[in-house]
View 1 (cartoon, rainbow, N blue to C red):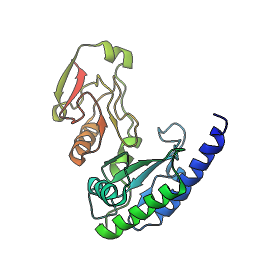
View 2 (view 1 turned 30 degrees about the vertical axis):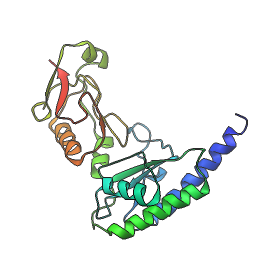
View 3 (view 1 turned 60 degrees about the vertical axis):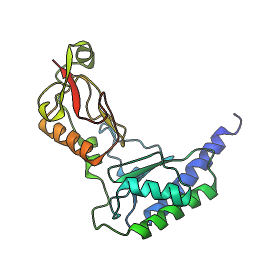
View 4 (view 1 turned 90 degrees about the vertical axis):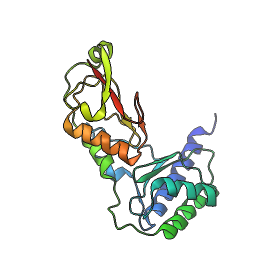
Length: 211
C-alpha cells in the first residue's frame, strides 16, 4: 500500500529488460511499443507487464513450446495460441524469475530450431486492422431475436455477440456488425489455428447472429 508505485516501477523495468533479452533470441519476437499502430486504430496502448512472445519463427507449435517451458523450466505462461505465448509478470516476480523465463525460452528455441517462417503473426495483424460495417447499434443487436448458425454459413449476417481473439484481446466482432466474407475467413483461420477465442461458442463451430 505504501510502496506500490515503486514496486510497479521495478516490475516494468524487469519486464522491459526481459523483452529486450527475448527479442535477442533467434526465432522470437516480442510485442513492443514500436509495433503499436496509433490512436484510433484499436492498438495504441500496451501493458508492458504482459509479454506477448511471437514464436512462429520456431519450428514448433506454441502449445508444445508452452509445455516444454512448464515441464523443463518451471515456467507457466498464461496461454499459447497461433504463433505466440503470453507471459504475465507481476510485482511478485523477481530478477531470478525473469532470468529463468529468458533462459527457458533460449533453451526451447535451441531445442526446436528455426522454422524459416516470418516472425509476426498475420492473424493478429488481420484482427487489429479489421474495419467492420455497422448495421445495427450494439443495443439493437443485443435485444434482437437471434439464432446460432454454422460459421461458414454466416457471411453477410449481422452479429448478435462479441467475438474476441486472445491475443490481442480486442473484439474482432461486436453486436450489430456485419460478418463479411473476410471476417468469416478470419474466424475460420482462428479456429483452425487453435487460437483462444471468447465467444458464445469458443470453438467457433457456430456464431450467434440476428435472425
